[in-house]
Image: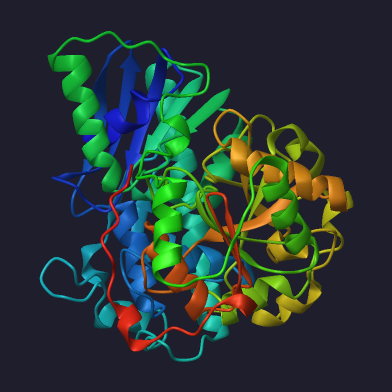
Length: 476
């Protein structure tokens, strides 16, 4: 119910179908509801152990990734494979019906009575034991990822199709961890069952706290709800912010050389560096709430470089080279570059890159060889299947990133930047100025822009052992 509330109550809709799909919360793993005004009613549910989220997590475990965090990797790996195991999954693991209801065959899963997601019968079905974490990825893992991704997409289409029938609504709200599967969301967008889809940007468990608070506010305190034309999430920029004074105090204490620039001069300096191929850390305003960096705690780069995707993965993020990056694009220019009608401010829809901008798709058929064939105008943000996980940026939600994108477009003709979270593999997104400075110094980032301050890596003194401590700086 908290997931459903987090999806509907901040949405721009007066009424909407509401679907939640995740691993497991209490007993429900999938619900369909109908939101109206300041309340909502749950109409249908599927209960544990039958769970689309846990099916996906089983394949996350089996392909050698960490459950509850590696699902993004499975989704990113899927386009490198072929859907060879779809029939085997549907015939043996999940009984998926036309109305979206389903049951898992628990004979193949280990999570009811043990610590592993899968068991020996699962191993036998797919021809061997799970991949060992950090070992080489093979074509089998790629094909498994593609297959479970396609099954998930089919299930989500049927579940949401059932929601349209039950509620009669042309609006859809989504939450739960599976709602972060932006590839499935893109398929829902193009399916035509709904005119508009809104997804809670913190769709996972973090969003449950928001939903519980909103439900108490509107249902139990009976406070009125007035949907805003966009939504009431304030761009998901709900975290702490730090003033220029606080940032400058830190930089002076650490003896970090910097330039202080404001307004157009700041955006010009950053845009010039990006146009020259530098990768920059971008730290502005309030931190994002949810798993996506949306331009407040971001790493930004030029999307036109064919080498940028692998370079950022390997020398800055220290993660697997196959993982794709998202494009942040000026809202007013998005439709020229991507097959997207409307907006995607929270980076939750994957859509095709338009053919004139995309170039020919890779012709290589084997796994990571496909990376070599990505071309077109924005190869750093075009996945091997010609898709991109788009973030549209408008001046109302994020004026700083919008101004930077405009400055970059003025210099290059490209209104797009690579946008990935400001962190390295295994660490949370940076929150404070000190977090950002440490990440900047320990990675291949070449410039850091924090508030009004611009720092060049070449000017910085080396970190010392005493820099391992985190000074206490209170957010504003």
